[in-house]
Structures are given as C-alpha cells and as structure tokens.
Amino acid sequence: MKQAGTLAGAVTRLGKREIGLVATLFCVAALVLGFGLIADEVMEGDTMGFDTRVARFFRPAGASGPIGPDWLHEMARDVTSLGSMVVLCFLLAAVVGYLLLIRKRGAALLVVGSILGGTVISFGLKLLFNRPRPEIPGGIQVFTASFPSSHAMLSAVTYLTLGALMTRVAAGVRLKAYFMGLAVCLTITVGLSRVYVGVHYATDVLAGWCVGSAWAVLCWIVALRLQRRGQVERPGEEQGTQDLGAP
Image 1 (spheres, rainbow, N blue to C red):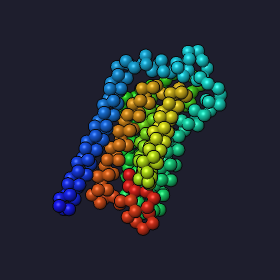
Image 2: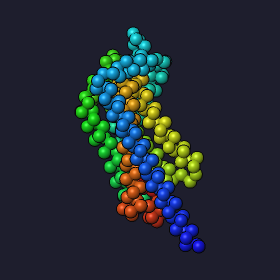
Image 3: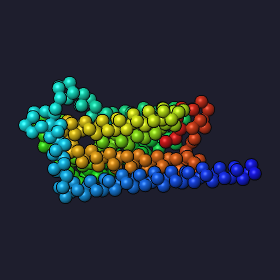
Image 4: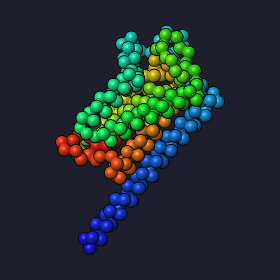
C-alpha cells in the first residue's frame, strides 16, 4: 500500500509538472503571437493613430517637452537608463561573477546565454523592421531603429530572469511574489519611460515586452529541463552555496 501511494504521488507530481510545462509553453506562444500581430499592424501603418494618441498624452501638441515638472523629466531619464546596455552589462557581470564565486557555473552560463541571446534577437529584429524613430525635437539621442524597443525587451529578459533566480532563494510565497513583482515593475517602468522621453512609439514598447518576456520564459523552461537532467547544478549542490539555484 505504501509503495502504491508513493507511485500515485509520483504520477500526480509528474502530471502537474507536464501541465505546468504545457501552460508555460502556451504563454510563450501567446506572447510570440502578440508580437507578430503588433509587428504586422506596424508594418501596415495601422498603429500610427494609436501611437500618436499615446505620444500626445505624454507630450501634448506644441509642447516643448513631456508633461510634468522638470524633476520628473530628469527622473524619467534616470529610469530609462536602467534598460540601457551599459547598466544591464554591469548587472550581468555582477550576477555572473557572484554565480561563479559560489561555483554555479551552469547557472552563470545560462544567465549569459539568456541575456546575450535576447540582445542578438533584439538587434536582429531592429534590422529586419527598420522602423524610424519618432520625430520629436529635444529628445534623447539614439542610434538604432525604433521597432521593437531594445530597452523594453532587454529589461524584460534581464529583470525577469534575475527575478526568477531570486525566487529560488525565497523561502515563502510572499517573498517569491515580491521578487517577481519587483522584476515586472522594473520592466514596465523602463518601457513606459521610453515613450515618455519620446524615443519610442507605444507599439515599440509593447512589442519589446512581448518578445522579451517570451524569450525569458523560454530560457527558464530550458534551464529547468537541464537541471532535472542533471546537466545544471541544483540549489545547494556545492558546499556552502545555498544562495542561488540554476535559472
């Protein structure tokens, strides 16, 4: 009876795991589909009315700058830098260095692969669509195409990946929710700041969120599958390294 109960429990856990995998893959597919629909509408020029209305909300016609006092403008510039390549590279180096110090080489490699892969996809999509930037005087100087927003995409990839890593540390549901909530908040704030400072259309940011989130979730699925196969170290495998598990 005890063996039968153990077997039934294992089957139940396996069933829940597979259901979770299917649900997660469905989420990835929905995000990719969302990106495709936005991209199709952008290429046909059907989003300009929406993009213009959102841009006018933050920067009314004839205004010399975005709405709000000067301190809010400076704050937006600070916030938008949280999605810049410089800041994200510093953050990546810090996290990877920590993982290497605690001998989580597999986890470090997966984090690097996730973020560098997202970077390649982002700039590849920019070259493919080659959408011009909004023509707003006095904005931040930029050098790449507009669609999709690399700040929105890479902040989603980076912060969601790191948020998922931190859930491996958290002991309770509230802490796990806190870390993931913080990651989502940072991702959304960076994306909104890009529209506020006038360097992106709203659809650029929406598309960046879609593809960035899809890539982050897909990388997380791959990481968990590798961990279950023993190809990535599990949390606490190395002596004195209870801090972080593989992504």
